[in-house]
Image (cartoon, rainbow, N blue to C red; front, side, top):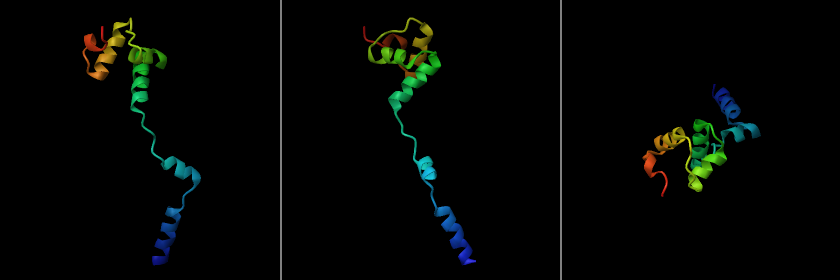
Amino acid sequence: MIERNAENQEKVAKMTLKGYYLQIPEASHPKTDFVNEIAMEAGVSVATVRNWVIYGMKPANKKHIEILSRKTGIPADELWED
């Protein structure tokens, strides 16, 4: 019986290259994830969201401003500096 347990452990311990790769945790990129999430929810491109976030361009569509405010917790009138 001990031999069978050893055989089972040996089978479990074997790893293929694909198995190894699939075990690697996904990388986390919070800033990219945030931009992608906003783009998907607002129905706009990632470039558009980056323009809002990085270059301070304000969306013309009020729904987009509401999405940004809700996702960040920042009041709509405080999202950008004047």
